[in-house]
Length: 388
Length: 132
Image 1: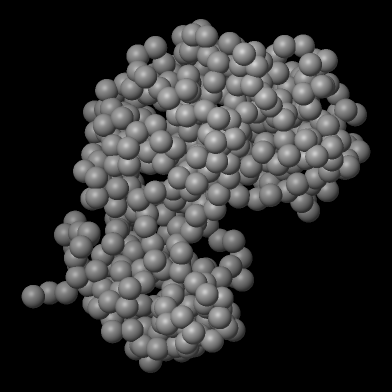
Image 2 (image 1 turned 135 degrees about the horizontal axis):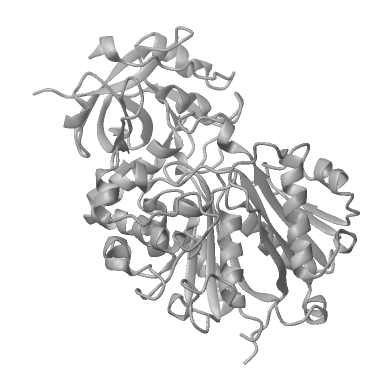
């Protein structure tokens, strides 16, 4: 059977570095662009659309277009934090379908290891919410922790259940020679790691790493000319969720909106997915996102992730088979790009043999940007193998 | 507790939010309500985020609230409690919980408005558990 697809991912590349001591941010962007184009069998002169977000140095995409010597007829610099690149994927497909470009390049890169992980985020003094948050010292971790605390309160989710997310990621990361943390951990290891912001322990938190990734998205015609390694983009959805004028509900994420749109466009359901790559800034991010995407009932995420259900070859839903942000890589504190890249590996049968899902035909990738305790951009893509 | 409290960062203040901070300096928590749809929103804005009316007005909150969620930030020199408190007026605000042992804080706890001084000398609305 052949499902319709507006566009294909023809190339994907993840930078091997995790600590870019002697590589500039601009070079990282260009390195990953070069890698993804080589993977696709294309050159930079084939690129006519460029997509990047706030991690790209300079004004929008202008500086990087110049640095890389691109000649563009389409650009999009949608910035929704770590979900940007999953949104770019959808926008690239729309632009290609509309004839605005035919080879779209998406890049992400950065060197966050110079910054302090505990630092309060500051988006500038004109940020309208700034005065009502900055003095209370929200950090990324205590922001997500507040969503976790409410989830535990409403649904009885436990620290043991959250820990299973990290355990599954570590089981996969042991096979990834590039992963920042390759050691296998147990539920007890997570629970005995220092409490950072209740209820999140150190091992509930993702790694901080330098690096980057890139994707090349092309029209079906170009994909066909490049052979059979292209991955189909079958559906995409995106959404913004925020504090709603103070009438808040922190028990769900923007995935409740982006997920159904992506599944509807693909004419598929969660049960059809062979694996899922879910943004994992923290264990709670995965648990809530899985619920919101419909892999289980709301409030049942804790039971769903427990007992190895996310471990490839063990559970029902292999997730983040590269080790994810929790163990492998979280370049410039933005996770959507690497989720798509690992989904592409799975659909090409190029994941590590120890984590490769047999006959992997359909995969989901999901990005979350911003913070789930306040405001976030959420984006979901459904991807299919070339013959899906 | 106060001798071990962290310092509170200065809020970025805009022309739109200056009255909120003037109110705090006078010991009041000011909210905004829409004259057209009647809804209170938070954080306060010139335009109502529910009906987009420009007719929003300041009023003083009761100072009563309940903890919707919280987290204790542990791995810092002076641990602190960040929270969302749902006010009696129906909106929830990010704040800190003070004047208590962080280990006794719980969702659903009743809290009462109090203030802390920030860097730069602003009065900051925070909350303390209501003691019986």
